[in-house]
Image (cartoon, rainbow, N blue to C red):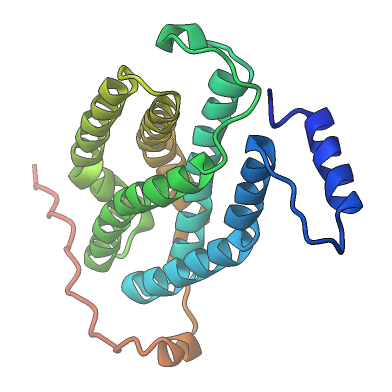
Length: 246
């Protein structure tokens, strides 16, 4: 029996309405799964808001900017959306599910989005911190956003791409094992990581940095006081090499 079927859900609703006020409950796998979904995602919006807000505050203090953390959080959500999209395409709609020897279930496992959020948000934010740290250092050295993007990519591009490939291969290997839910988790993480490393880190991050220009580093003085950011002396900037005289 497909517990996600609308007819099954309607039966559960009617049964609960009929038993309201009585010392009885609705049992069965479908009812248990529905209660599990409500328990998991009932407070998920509050959890998501807390994680995003805490991440934003910590990154704002680390990068001394109000724009960079916002961009980092939004781009991480793009990577998560891509991973969820792959899960729906493969395991709910059935496109390409035969590659992994599974049949489309018309729904993904109830706890899978939460699990992928926990893993992928941390991994993709790790890559973002690598890149933005080097870009911030390069900007402090040169005072140029364009140069900061160029140096940041040069210093972290190989590291981010290599680590993403290693993780992708590991998760794809895990997806070859038995177990429908293990395949879901492995494929979702592999897709999200490779999308994050190729599309987000290699294209969207540098593109948005260049488009925003000096606005990337915007931070009012009062926010420095609120976040207790010390007023550090800017590092000596690297001067351009002298032009040789012919």
